[in-house]
Length: 221
Image (tube, rainbow, N blue to C red):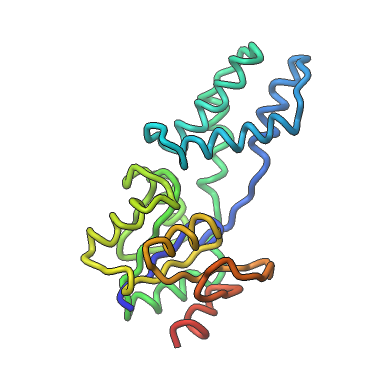
């Protein structure tokens, strides 16, 4: 094993989710417009998936967010600035905190391995959060600089090719079964599922840990 690649959000840094869609929906219903909440939330999610997993031309996460909001505002004839509303909601992403064990674990791993981050995010968001939390690694890869999103094979093969690594020399660690387990497994990379909530189960991961200390204590010892 020569290199370990970590997902960022949900793995190294805490996340909150679910509020953005309901905020945009409230912006619409506050105008006296009736919206089917279930259908709205399903379309909100599917729009993102279509632009990250489908054949659409690459867009940054911010651009997808703005376009998605604008689509709903146009549909319901809501006179609001989609870009302003998107940036207001995205501002919280820059304040995400690292899990308490992360800095110590990463610093220890960097003594013996190449340590990378591979994240579906925009460059400025990840750079800001890493700086805020004092997190450093050897290299950082985002969907923005790779121009594709996990779990696409190209996301992982670009990292391998740039660093002269084979899949057998790499471990991928993340909290998402689809992005961080099924994606890298498809090209032969061993995977570690970070199951902080104790959900349990096997989706093809090679190892399961409940916090990052388990990577050193149970996987790499």
